[in-house]
Image (tube, rainbow, N blue to C red):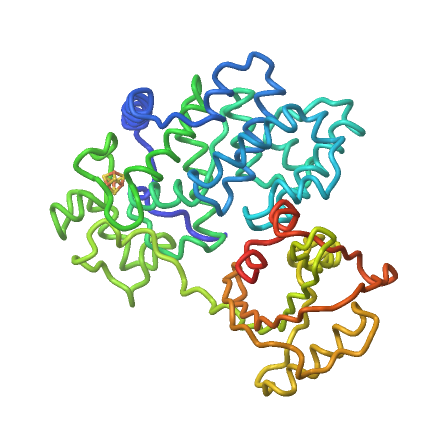
Length: 414
Ligand code: SF4
């Protein structure tokens, strides 16, 4: 078994833990942002309805900024105010509402989980973090902890990106913060710190601190409610040797939580020395030819052909302009020929490569893919009979396009 981390990285003094909880909660009560899911969680008396609201907000907030989520959350809760209502929605409706929020599998999994609660769990949400994680698809350790602590009062911690940053700074943890060994320690720490009487508020306070004060680039240490517990700040202010010798000493002995010896403390970075992450892998570059097929609709307005993507994989079930992945380094002439051949299946007649007009390129970054769409346009005369033996397809006006389950990338293409 790996050696336990030196005591300097942990919270071991009960008086210090108590003071940290008190200071953090007092700050949160005074300074917390007004967010719709918080208002609902605070006013809703039915615990399952609270849990549903927290769940929806937490899933939307994964990888997405609060400011973007608010509008989506409000529309979602208006359309499906309860788990039971969501369970009856179609995937198409879910994708339409989710369009533009990214990471589309989140919405799909949320709806699948709602159906499971209704059909297999008699409409009752699991009430502990362990059961939530075990029984609900798409609910990981973090989301389970958030729902259980905020909605059901379970004294369990949470660790998200904000909490990682705060804890790594509080305790000078400079080993790779995405490594399983460090993540396990941070969960231990979050579970030890969480306030027993107000676990939901404590968890939200820790995340709020990371989101508004202990931010990645320029943290507001002078105003921080837990600055007296912060070892990174002590180190910045007092330099080396710091008044926490057990932390300072442990770097030499191969401590599993200290920065690697090859990356020592950089005094120009101050507290932002923490957390540290291993270098990210470069996103994969992908090129795709896409064609906006356009015709005049019955009222003279332009209409565009969109087709549905497969029901699994990236952007599952979303609609897009007919598209074709391109081999690396393919010349433009060959791209046109390949795309023309692909379009023939949709139009039901030969498409001349030279009739495709090259419009330009649209770049869109997915989490792990650097996607370039090479955009062509093709106006069509006369009617086109769609072959429904292929993927589902339909003609839409611009307004209908914008209301459809299409990705942000396709909106950029149009
Ligand atoms: Fe973060 Fe600064 Fe507060 Fe430490 S003192 S927790 S680095 S904001």
